[in-house]
Length: 102
Image (cartoon, rainbow, N blue to C red; front, side):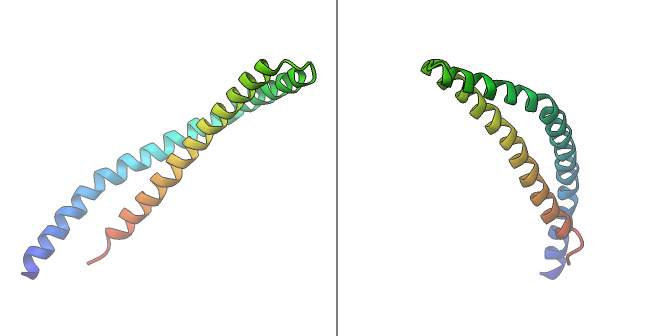
């Protein structure tokens, strides 16, 4: 019984290696996209915020709603990328801790 258990655990460990590799690549890509995106999207978000404040002062309420909706979507996309990165990192760390276990 213990030999079968040992063999199954080795098969799972071998199957975990490609998953770890894919997760590491996903982490690298999301980190690169996050940094580049933040440098590009931060000025865009500031411009949209400024336009929203201008439209707020001029009482153009539909424009204010559209601009702040755009701001929220951009913020959610940036947050989603960070969420993917953190979850991939946690899963990769869990699989890496699983590898040396007996």
